[in-house]
Image 1 (tube, helix red, strand yellow):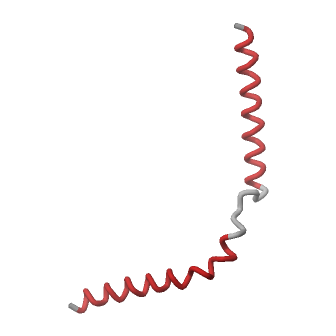
Image 2 (tube, one colour):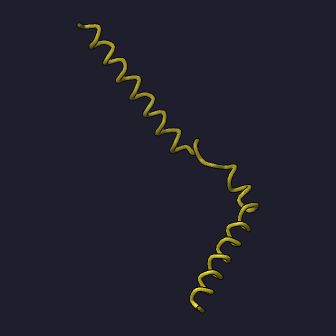
Image 3 (spheres, one colour):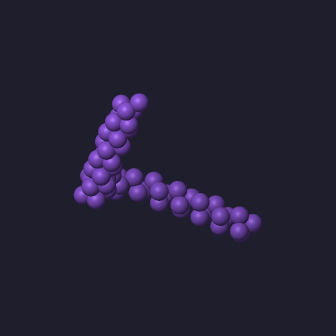
Length: 64
């Protein structure tokens, strides 16, 4: 029975260490996306075209 308490204590300590290391890596910017901003300009035209098409469709329905 005492082995369960030892294993439970060790597992909680390991979980806390991983959680602290995760928080530190997030604060240091480890998970920041540095690739998408460099290619965003390649896809903005499609978004603008879609917005223009939606606005022209809404204008057509308003005029009718």
